[in-house]
Image 1 (cartoon, rainbow, N blue to C red):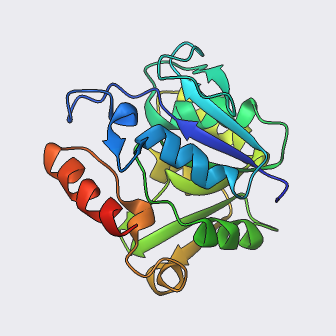
Image 2 (image 1 turned 135 degrees about the horizontal axis):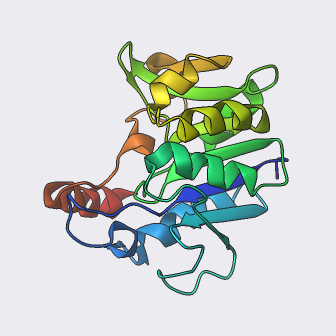
Length: 200
């Protein structure tokens, strides 16, 4: 187990899929159970960020729930809430609708984190994965400043901290199909997830 905390962001409104993505069944588990199970393989402590800090999902005894300090401020506010509620310097932050996380890739990212404020996958020059990333507590003052001034772009925040980007070829060494970054926004995504789970 590595000295880091897993943070699952579950405060979104799920507007595109139209229902709670975290509770969709993939294989024999809900999506949130799959995310929690993957993180629990490498981390002792898991935090789930919800709008009010309450568990509206299902019994998840291995996780601690914290409230979004900046409700309505998007993923950046959720990252701040999770990291500020953590007792470790390093924190893996993922979205609640990523059922195929690679623990090998996540461990690699943690190992890269020394000397950086964040470790973020980047599969193309303009496409990065800030909700599958490692953040240190050094990020908190910068995030707080951005959120409180209404600047909610994660890209803009990352421009002000020291980031180690993990490029696509490096990601593929640990996750050849890049399924770690698969998430569910539409019904077609859910149907694809069911097919992936058959061979997962």
